[in-house]
Length: 248
Image 1 (cartoon, rainbow, N blue to C red):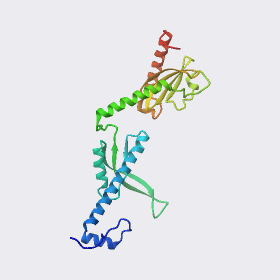
Image 2 (spheres, helix red, strand yellow):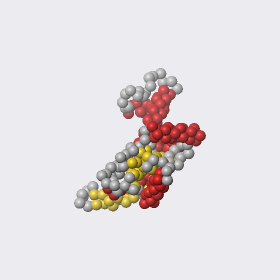
Image 3 (cartoon, rainbow, N blue to C red):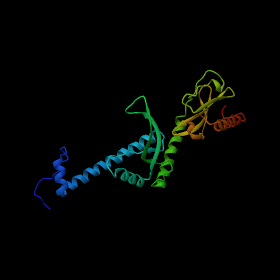
Image 4 (cartoon, rainbow, N blue to C red):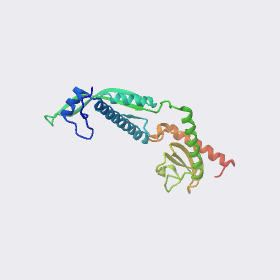
């Protein structure tokens, strides 16, 4: 009904207990609309906060992230549903672990406690694109641009060292480097999020470039199997040059 008065809630002013009491009892339509609008604004802000967490992880080449929790009930579920509609895989994970910490009452003693952690995790590594044909076409277009750019801006040698053996090389930012036949430098470089086998003259001129694989991104150093494969491939390339196939 119409109470012939101003709204009880004013978002421009601090909330008082009087405002809440009047709103809860008389529930004027304009005040209800104000609360709904504020909730919508806060939900939009929370979604952007979740998106920022995802983008921060993606920037670091991580394919999942813990979503920030919201103190108001329902917001995390609403955000989870929204992200699922946007193509993300969202899981609710509930885990427990034992932790030992100093006692609050006696700092010389420790207390073992069970810590329970609940969180929503967004993943996108194996998530299906919303528009697969459009994304695939754009993916190909951008990779073609990268390949053209490599022709006009060939890679530079990243390793350094005075000697003529791989043991004397400093890889620098290269994934791996060695010297072949005291004449060629073989490097694995990560360019535009792809891995390339590069062969250089000792002086630094690039002679060959091709895409290759790196197990687990060489997070803990090059895999032994990968190194053997790279060395074998480099030898084949150089042998081809000696047979009159290319420079060298």
